[in-house]
Every structure is written in C-alpha cells, then in structure tokens.
Length: 301
Image (cartoon, rainbow, N blue to C red; front, top):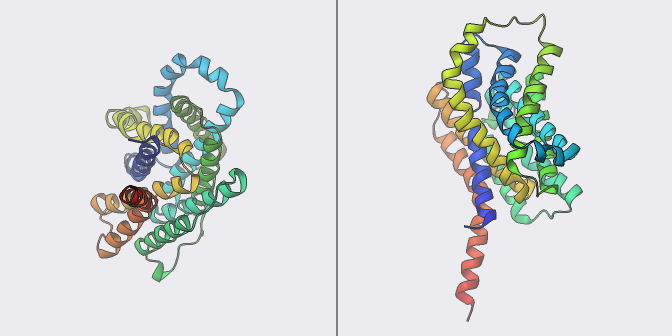
C-alpha cells in the first residue's frame, strides 16, 4: 500500500479517535473531576507515560531543537483547547466550530506552502461542510460563537490548521518525537490554564477520586488517545493540510454516533445523511485518483 494511502487512513483514524475524546473527559466530570482539573488530569496521564519514551529519545529531542518544541507546542495548544471547549460548551457547537479546519488549512497551505486548491478540493470541502450542517440542524440556525467555550473551539481549529502547516513543512520529523513533545506540552499548557483561570472557581477533588479513575483512564489513553495522536503526527506531514482537515472530519460522524449511543442524543435520517456526505467528501479525492488510474490502465496499449 502506498505511503500516501496509509497516511490518509492514519488521519481518518485519528479523526475517529478525536470523536471519542468527549467520552473520557465527560466521564471524569461525572466522577467529580470538573473543569480544568479534568483537563489537567486527562493530560497528566499521557505526560507520565511519555517520560520513559523521552528518556529513550533524549538525543533526538536535543537534535530537534527549538523547531521540535514549536511543533509540539502548537499541536498541544490546539488539542488542549479543544478538550477545554467540550467542557464549556455543547459538544455539537465545539465540533462544528473546530471543523472549520479544512477551510483554514486549505487557505493557509495556499498562502504559505504554495499548494494549489483544486476544483475537486473545493467540491470535497463543500460536501463535507454540507454534511456537517445537515447533522447540526443548520435549518434552525448555525451555532456561531456565543460563549467562551465556542471561541475556544474556534481557536482550537485554527491552531490545528497552523500545526498541520508546520508539520507539512517539516516532513522529516519522527512521529514518535512529535508524540512525546505533544503530550509533554499538553500537560504544561493544561497546568498553566489551571493556575491562570482555575483558582477561586473550583477546588480539586480528593486524591482517592483521581486514583479511582486510573484503571480505565490509563488503558484508554494508551490504546485510544496516544494511538490517535501518533497517527495524526505520522500522517499529517505526508498530506495536503486541506485534505488532512477533511479526513479529520470523521470525528463528526463518530461524535454524532457515540453521542446517540451513550448520551441519548437523537440519531436518525438526518445524521445518517450527514455522515454519508462527510465520509464521501473524505474519500472523494482518493476515489477520483483510483478512477483515473484504472481509466489510464484500460486505455494503455
């Protein structure tokens, strides 16, 4: 299988994982670990799991220098802000505002990387956004930013677009190093947000409440969260940032389905149609390329 095809699958899988992020974060809140305390605890676990990897990769960390730290920092800010937005606004609103990402990424890639915006890319973005609006009941009003959580989600999507541009411009970086520094910076940023905005608004739960969550949180972080971030760090540099944004929109489909299963949110024909449109948009360019190759093979003497 071609590297580009694998990268597409990797980004689609990563989007799937991001579509599950709300579940452990909301579960922590239900357990009594709320707000920024939940965010810090959620990222403290992968931070601790990343430290042994850092001990093994310290030479690569030194060789990566400031550029590696900038890549890890920008991606981490985006990830942490998205997690925070889920706690301070509706999941639907956070997802919609984050997933203006394909538009930001396509425009930034054109400006800073000189990558062309093809008619097929415009069509794919149009189909994807249409599917998103179908799921989110745009006929009753598009949820524009109205509260701090909405603005945090919007900023998160824009920052992920910037991160995808930086990753694309630095293709030779090892995904494992990006993973390590992403989670190190994620914990640092979550701690900073708690220190800056947490005191006086919430009190930390007792230690036993945190310890009680570890039996399910550690495997969740290892199997789901860290694998999703690794695949995004591996696949993103290999693809056009606009296409990455489209592939990441699998999160919307997964988020809608899981919200229906575990939160009792409605799931009917509207959601099915939206998911089909979003999935089709993500596969459009690959299907077009496959059709072109088969046509060329048939026409070849």
